Image 1: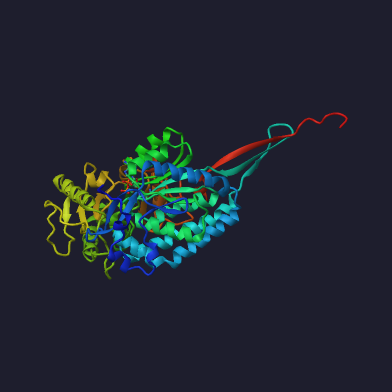
Image 2: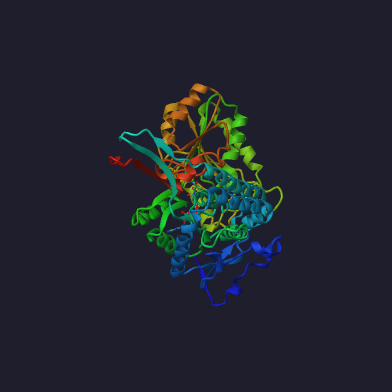
Length: 512
Ligand code: NAD
């Protein structure tokens, strides 16, 4: 992380490129949003466009003192925000939602600039992100408690759901809008103020959401975006007794560090972590349909997706045919700047990500994988120093469990394929990972499909559909892919506590 020290915040504005593409330039913000005010730290961090590696702007880095102030402001705001009627909170959330939809093109442009994905993907993400706001605005009106048949004489027993308090939301760069709204909408709707720490690679999407939240009229302290040095900010949030919930989306490595820090204050934690999704093709599947689905499940967001197919299991009987047709389709994918028409895959987020992709390929080749050339230029030399953030779709056949591409979350457009003969042995291989986020099954035979569904140790299993996520489903993983669920009616649980009460009857005083 390269920070620039300056006392002159005005030097650290957004680049001309970024301002020029916006219809509404006020959406481009580089200061943090705290207690209803744009707040500058003393240091600024350069943010690059992954497509050309040029600086697009600078985000401010708040000091620890400023983080404490933000926590205090949110804690103060909780006193009143929790008392608003659910309908009233829903009304503001819906204004925020509508402003996001109105600003969709600008928000998508900002996202392409800082994240690199294609404009079409970015537009889709804004819709997806906004859908959580609408969902939770409606859902929080229905956060019912329950009555309990009493085991105590003359008593009424019941539960109510109460907002937990200030919520810290720490989010990744791969979905710079939706990973924020999926958390923030649930927390805000149920009555919790939020402190959002976006990834340093993609702060501008978060700050634009803050500008729209400001316009929507959230009371000061309810909606905050705090930018700063990740470890300091996260530790400060985790160690504060005023922060009651921690919701994190990111890598399993960082998730474990945060869980340790949050243990200091016994916080309620929800963790959406990494994945290693198996993509299973059953014997009775048509090869072309399997190829098309594998393509969609692998290459969205250039493979930088926790749901991306990470290991493609193909029946031995169709193995070579699958590889041939998959490679044919992969050769048609266009890699380029996300703003250009016809581009399917934008750049990876940074050089480190491209080098990781390269290392996965080299490791697999050293261990005996077969490289099927899909690069349109046919000139990629995977053993040379990597020259840019762009990485071609790469197909590795004959992948084995000792390879990193099989074991690790790929997060890049490298597709590892392997054959199988026995369904149960293959299912055991699918489960032989510390991850348990998502799995895909493609086939017709309902008995086999049901067998797979039951056997797969994953939080989400999608059968014959690449599209599995959305506002109404409980998104989340098992094992080291996470704790808790986002979206659906269960998403509110992460930001609320169940309070039980026992309402006894005082003995009647005789004569009264
Ligand atoms: P990351 O773990 O590196 O960073 C996530 C967040 O943590 C960022 O805000 C970052 O600034 C912060 N952070 C980084 N290092 C930190 C540290 N040492 N201490 C405290 N905070 C720190 O993840 P990423 O690279 O931004 O995102 C990619 C990962 O996110 C992948 O593993 C992907 O699977 C996961 N992800 C999961 C889901 C899900 O819903 N399960 C969704 C999207 C992404």
